[in-house]
Length: 344
Image (cartoon, rainbow, N blue to C red; front, top):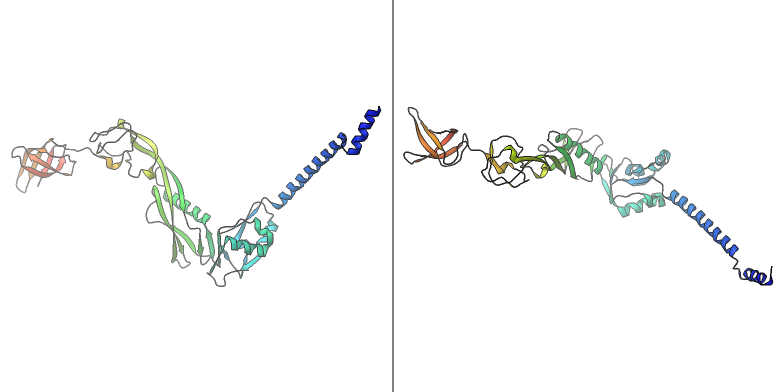
């Protein structure tokens, strides 16, 4: 080794800039960082388990103290023994008398849980408000919604089409005074497409209706609806080639014609693909305005028939004004058939 190279190596050692040592330090730092990240991930896993405690918005306390298991449920795979021990934790005093209630806001609830459970309460999922009743039974909003859907599904079984229940509006909760009370659903009429109103009725053990709570839901009913295949003019007779059926929500087509009956004519013009409603069609008249008919007079001792002209359209059983072609007198009678108007 020459003196120049030797001097260079001594300088590196003296200044601490040896390339080999710097690389080793860098590798060690990277390894340490990886270990720290792994440790942090493990610690995070310990801090954030895959279960959560969900506090209800309404609950009942059986004894003088509110128990955690009475106001909350565990979501996720918490060990059974751990939840059993946690659920039995006594918290704050329950309302003193049966049927009395206490309401706690989210902020107040968190404060109370921290006081009795410590930092563990910070991982709980809290409602905007918790109402606790002494004794009885609480039915939460999810259960009320499920019952409403089942009730309306059964009531709507006779509707023709595909039923879809949306926009449920139910109470957040309902308290029963006694666990033996029943909660029934009632409605004044049959289920129908559109907004349906129902009532939750609390019935006591003696069979008396104690309280009622209003609820509602929107029923979509999808099915074939008669639509015009081409523009149909007013007073034009409706024929099968003019009608096609398209899948539509009958909740918004309650007045749609179902395609039955007839013969029909169009009472007002209908455009292409427009829904044909019951009030846009009318029966084809048996007698048309300007048509010739027999005007029959029937009395106790007389039967007379004369020629007359119909002054309006009319169907069987309807009254129509006609003009006697011999005397020009206008007379009102009842249509018997396509050729006869009866006057008594």
